[in-house]
Length: 141
Image 1 (cartoon, rainbow, N blue to C red):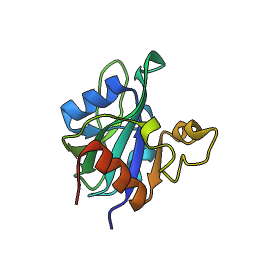
Image 2: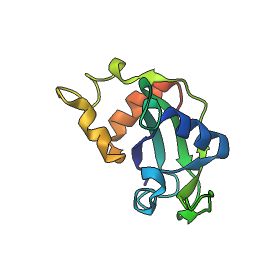
Image 3: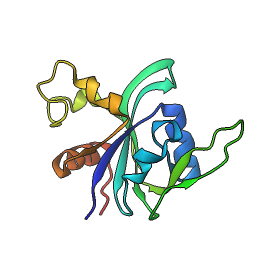
Image 4: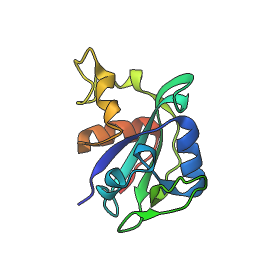
């Protein structure tokens, strides 16, 4: 059964992941990508342009389907060995979260709506997935 996830990363990192057809979470940690299963859908939310700084983005910017059965580790150089998942990304357009705050179950009626994004990755309901997918202009089945 397909599950739907939100992954949090800077726009710069998400764009690189889309370019390479990979999903990476939590700065390359294994545990977050291990929770994903083949055919799950991940939607990326970017708080900022770059890690730790840059222009505020606060938008959903990419979405894709997990293609493999398990994470794999790569040597990205300089001692960085992140875990990744192969992902097929869909054509989408950015959607500022402010357009959906009152509709999404994980942000609706919350003064501190951004707190949940500190988790780095979390599962969402099918209803939330449908709202975001429709707003981003894609449908994954």
